[in-house]
Length: 219
Image 1 (cartoon, rainbow, N blue to C red):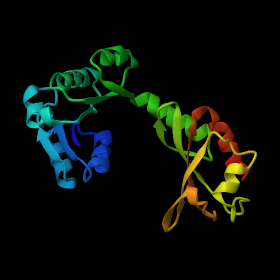
Image 2 (cartoon, rainbow, N blue to C red; image 1 turned 180 degrees about the vertical axis):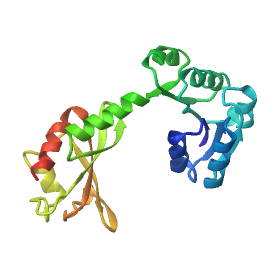
Image 3 (tube, rainbow, N blue to C red; image 1 turned 60 degrees about the vertical axis):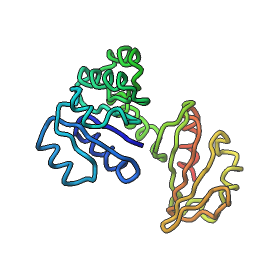
Image 4 (tube, rainbow, N blue to C red; image 1 turned 90 degrees about the vertical axis):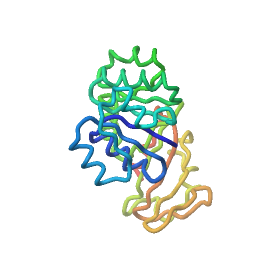
C-alpha cells in the first residue's frame, strides 16, 4: 500500500518503523530538524512542508495514496489534512484525536478517529484488571487478541492445547490460535505440547476476558 503520514512524533515514528519495508511510506512534516532525523534513521520518503497545505500533500503523492494517517496533536490541523485527503479521493483516512468534542466533525468528513487518551486508558485498565494477559490488538465485534504465558510449575506444563480448551474452567468463547516457543511458532490446531515459558495467543470477546485471566492466574 501507499501510505501518507502527516506529522513527526513518537506515534508516527513507531508507525514508520512498523510499516516501512512492507509498504511505501511518505511522511510530511514542517519541522526541518525532525525531517532530517527521521530521514537518517528510516527508508521512508520525507517531505519538509506544512502537512495542511495542498502543495505538501501533492508532493507526497496524495492522489496515489491508499491510506492517510494524521498524527499531529492539534485536532484542527488533523481535521484540515483529513478533509483535503478525502477531497483527493483517499479511500482510507485515519486521524489521531485528542479531544472527544471533535468526534462528530471527523465523522462528517468520513475520517476514522483513534482517541489517544482513550487508548492509553484502555491499556492501563487492561494491565491492572487482567494482569495475567497482554492485549495485542482489538478486533471487530468487541473481540481482542491476547497473549498469556505458561508459568514455571504450572499444571499446564506437558499438557496439550486441546486439553487446555477442554478444561472446564477455560472460557469456550476463546480460541487458541498459536503457541510461541523460544525457537519456533506453532499452529495451535496441531495440538502442540506446552512447556514452561511458552506464550499462548488467543482470540475472544472482551466481556469474557476476566474468566480467561482467572484461568491463567490459577494455572
